[in-house]
Image (cartoon, rainbow, N blue to C red; front, side, top):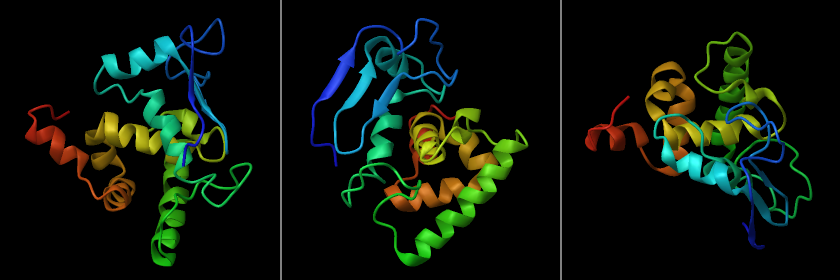
Length: 164
């Protein structure tokens, strides 16, 4: 999926006014090319558990749905490896979550609405960073991600005594 090096740049983001979860860029996954991350944001992503912010996870998620079929630019936010039935379920779940985001009833950051692929990347980021609210407020999305990754991250947090 990622065939080029990961480039780490100094600072928190690609803007002097960067703030986590602000919609500014802490990282970028370039189709068929390198991933670029801001060093301080990488550290922030692993420092605070349960904040739903981790640019490494977020950018890796982008590589799950583009570049695999020699796509030069991401054309949609459907993850790779889905069966026809799973793809149909993903489209339905994606539309429902989009509506929740617009009504501010989703646990995802509003940044998920910012463009192609961001809903999936933000969902994956939260699935691994803070799965409790995702499972509670967006159960169908959580279920789809659990099936996709073959992992129940909320259960892992509970088993580790870190449930939120």
